[in-house]
Image (tube, rainbow, N blue to C red; front, top):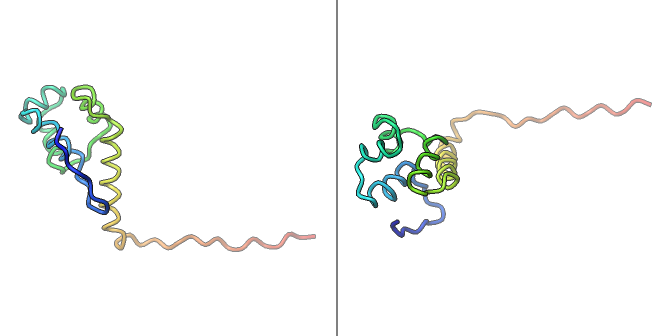
Length: 108
């Protein structure tokens, strides 16, 4: 697999893009052949590899079984990617902090 460093603070790659670069391209596969190996349709795989659809746990397990890339690693990449994308939209989410009313003093 290619040696590419991760820079702190950088936007993480979508896990599908990671799979495309580190598996499909590295092994000289086509998307069609990769889909065949994984037992999925090309139309299901393509959006994931292009970063347009999330990597599901099932797809991550298929990649692990076929190419020995850890499912946990790929799902952590998905969670990291999702977290960074949501942080970019944090100002759009209008929620006020919850402040419970103080409890009344106990009666004697």
